[in-house]
Structure formats: structure tokens, C-alpha cells
Image 1: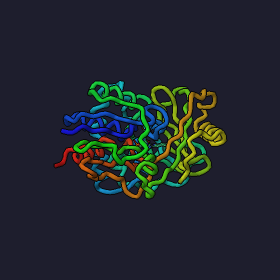
Image 2 (image 1 turned 135 degrees about the vertical axis):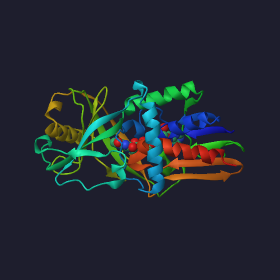
Image 3 (image 1 turned 120 degrees about the vertical axis):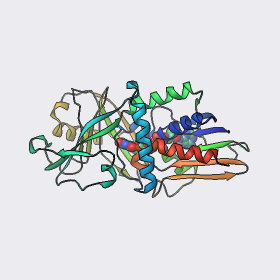
Image 4 (image 1 turned 45 degrees about the vertical axis):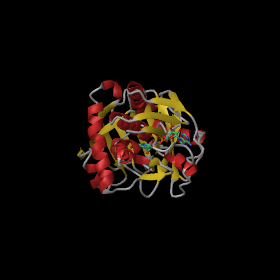
Length: 315
Ligand SMILES: Cc1cc2nc3c(=O)[nH]c(=O)nc-3n(C[C@H](O)[C@H](O)[C@H](O)COP(=O)(O)OP(=O)(O)OC[C@H]3O[C@@H](n4cnc5c(N)ncnc54)[C@H](O)[C@@H]3O)c2cc1C
């Protein structure tokens, strides 16, 4: 058993910390942002895997995560549940065999069910991980497990750990600066949170006049997003982009016309050719990297956490 510091309190850091504590390690979490400001808090989030490797190990991570989420869903305060989703576009969506295994399509949407600007769509039941509930729920689980969450910015990994200790580097897009990983790039997303006029179905518009767009009803709001701005680091919400999101969302879902704007968020998807889950022993200390989950960090989280714990605990 080791003393482990997890750097990062997004979905990857929190699930890693909990898994390590479950395996008997003494764990603390240090993070620049603990609630707001992470990519994880900006995700709505859906069961989906864009901008990430489509490999056998990613499929394994997704399966393990889904199994764990099914257990978490038994506590209704966790914010995990199945939700009907309609994915639509100007042509029938390309079949995605990788995702079909997790969210099997129910049926093709009837013409009357299609949102304006689309011509084909598919209904499926998709796990919804309501991050507004799930991230605080995970933090509460950390407190119960004796994991301290501390605010702090780590500027260098050199000398950060004592010999024998372990450090999990779960800093998401922050790895570009902290690790100097120039294979990682941000893909910026911006969302706006609206009051919910009674929507219960997730809507994903792939393309066409009003896409790309997602409209995700959650317990306390509706999350509207869509942009994926490659290589853009801007942390502040763009007002013009938000107006455009609102216009498009109201065009495809007229019930949002009078919905109040409750808030907004920006997140940087940490995109890399492959997720980095890797051990590096330096000066007697063990560093385990876990970052680069692209648009799929929530979907792959618990599976990656299991691999992180294996690497921390290995001889
Ligand atoms: C708009 C949007 C929608 C998305 N939708 C989905 C979805 O539907 N499904 C899905 O699976 N994924 C989705 N994603 C992707 C998902 O959010 C990310 O893959 C995931 O959040 C990455 O988690 P993370 O913990 O690695 O990074 P983050 O959540 O960004 O957390 C990084 C942590 O590291 C800390 N940190 C960084 N640098 C330092 C430092 N130097 N010192 C100390 N702390 C540091 C940060 O403060 C933060 O606590 C979406 C992302 C966005 C932006």
C-alpha cells in the first residue's frame, strides 16, 4: 500500500482516487479546480465516445465503466439513469458498431418525430450521467472514504513525490503544460444551461442547418452545446457563440423559447491519439499518468481508474 496523491479532481481524478482508496491506499487529491472549471463539469454528459481511440482497451474501459455506473444508478441521488435519445441528421447516421454495443438503437424515428432541418434519425436508450449531480456525489464519496480534496496548482512534477509514494497525473488538458505533452491538444466545448420546460428526451443533431447540437435534459436544467473548437484554449464563454446555440436549440426544440438561461460552462476536451495510461518510476517515486480521454472521459472513467490502480499497486 502506498501514499498516493492524485493531481486533478475531474471525472478521471475522482474515479481514480476512489478506486485506489477501495484498494486500501491512503489517497489525497490536489487540484486547481475542484467543482467549476473542469472539462468534466462542462460535459452534460452522455454515453458517447467522440475524439478518442476506438480500441479494444477503450471498449474494455467503457464496459467496466458502464457496469460501475449501473451500480451507482441504484442510488438515485447519483444522477445516473437511462434516457431516451434521438440522434438525427440530414442523412441516416453512419452505423457506429462501437457504440451500438452500449446504446442499442430502438428504432428509426418517424418523419413526424424529426426536428427541423433533419431528414433521418434513430431513437435509442442512452445512459445519462448528470454531472451536476454525479461529480458532487463522487466528491461526497471521497469524503466518506477519507480522501482529502485540496485546492492547489502543481507547477512541476520534479520533486513532487517522496520515494515510495505514488502520484496519479489526472490533469486532463492541463497535461500539455504540466507534463509538457505536445501530443495533447484541447478541443474546446461551450454549453449553456437553461431551465427545463419539461423536456425528457436527449436530442443530438449531427449536422444540417441547426447542427452540430446537443440538447440534454437533466434533473435541474437542460444543457445545450455542440461546438468542438480544435486547438482553442479560450477559457471564457463566447457571447456570440451562446446566442447561436440558443437560436439553434430553440429552432429544433420550440419549448425552449422562454427557458431562462441559468448558467454556462466552457471545457477543454483533452484530445490525444491514444489515452495515456502509463507508469513512470522516477527517483523511487511512481508516477501514473491518466489523461487524454478526448470527448469520452466520463464514458471511460471507471475502467481507466481500474488500470491506474493496477499500475499504482504493481510490484
Ligand atoms: C462540452 C463537453 C461535452 C462533453 N460531453 C461528454 C459526454 O457526453 N460524454 C463523455 O464521456 N465525455 C464528454 N466530454 C469529455 C469529458 O468531459 C472529458 O473527457 C473529461 O472531463 C476529462 O476528464 P479529466 O478528469 O481528465 O479532465 P478535467 O475534468 O478537465 O479535470 C482536470 C483536473 O486537473 C486539474 N488540473 C489541471 N492542471 C493542473 C495543475 N497543474 N495542478 C493541479 N491541478 C490541475 C483541473 O483543475 C481539474 O481538477 C465532454 C467535454 C466537453 C467539454
